[in-house]
Every structure is written in C-alpha cells, then in structure tokens.
Image (tube, helix red, strand yellow):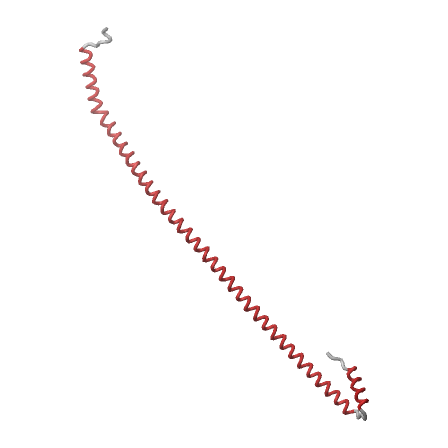
Length: 164
C-alpha cells in the first residue's frame, strides 16, 4: 500500500524539487522560449499582414489590369471602326477616281473619233473637189458636140476612178 499512498516527506521533497526545477526553467528556459515564441508570433503576424497587403495590391492590380483590358478593347474596337471607315472612304474615292478617269477616257475617245471623222469627211470633200476639177478639165479639153458623148465620157471616167 505504500506504493499507492505516498508519504508526506516524499510529497514535500517532490514539491520542493518541482519548484526548484520550475524556478530554474522559469529563469533560464522559459524566458528565451517565450521570447522566441513571441518573435515567431510577431514574424507570423507581419507575414500575415504582408500577405494581406499583397492580396490587396494584387486585387488592385487585377482591377487596374481589367480596366486597362477594357480600355484596350475599346481602343481596338475604335481602331477597327476607324480602319473600316477609312477603307470605305478609300474605296469610294477609288470608285470616284475610276469613274472620272473612265469618263475622261470616253470623252477623249469620242473627241478623237469626232476629229478623225471630220478629217475623213474633209479628205473626202477634197477628193471629190479634186475629182470634180479633173473631170471638168477633161471635159473642157475635149470638145464634145453632143450630150450623149459627154454622158459616155463621164461614165468611162467614173469607171476609171477608184475611191480610197
């Protein structure tokens, strides 16, 4: 039974030894351990604060990036619209220029055709006048007595004449 119920002296000495060990641990071990724990706790708090600050900065950066992305998309859409507008204007201008050039070419061709036609008519008139003069000369050179002879001579000359 002595093992189950300890004696008063044993309890006293165990309590005294516990208090001495507790004092020694408190004096030499607990302060450095508690200081290290406090330092670790402070560093963990600082790391948590830094992480929260970094998270806030990341959220701000993300919001800024999304804002920049929206602005970039708007700018891109505006550039596409402007490019399409410029392309349409260039296409319309090219059509107008082509029409003007085409009309000018047609007018020049018509003027050239008219000039050539007038030149051809002038040449034909000159040839007719020359032929008339030649026929008149030949008729005057030959003294013909009757109309029948003159008609035959004119028919013969007309057969000999080749029109260009």
